[in-house]
Length: 291
Picture (tube, rainbow, N blue to C red):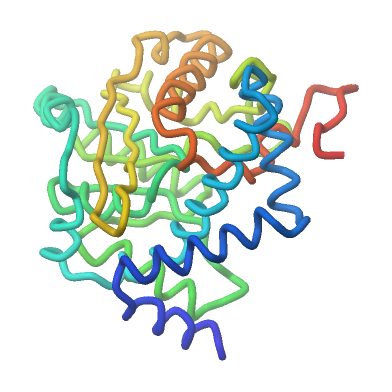
């Protein structure tokens, strides 16, 4: 089966069935030794050392299940009608912060961690306001690239490449009082960020979000979705960032951003992407915990 055929199949399956398949697949990744499981346990030992071994086992299992569910759900979410997509969001906490931010006229930056199903946020937000988001093209699979790009843009979002031109487009969007969206818990690569604590461990952290926020004091909101049980939909959260994110000191700003991310993740830790190598890049002379 080709990738396009698999995507087409997943897009047609009902959400409860996708989540059941995700449960089975996630259990497989938890039971069988593999790279995802190994990284998940390393990250949990770093970030949540207060947990007992049993608690880490259970959290690792639930996290891998939710990760599998997230990626299986994406083709369906990117294919749904506007009405069906909106019906999956059963509750929204903090929507008033988004509305207030847009009313201030300086634009809004959505800081979206890999928590719950992050694809749903861009789809929903782009139905309410003009929106510009960074996008990393899928050069290895033109079919996948076309599917993801068209799916994310179908309600009006503008996707821009992760290059200098894309960054300029984000600044322009904020100048025009639009929405922008960034995934701030990714490693930007050595030399492209600053080291700031994340769950008490140094993590290479992007500075782009800080620079965007400081440009004209755009409102920064953390946003994440919480997957409900048995295919019953999602609960969406908008959480105001602390004023420290506007600090001109990039280390202090990055530290504040990471602290806000931590607070969101602690609300639903089982739905975070713990299998990502968040701490892979370390200061000179310090080894990666994944080595």
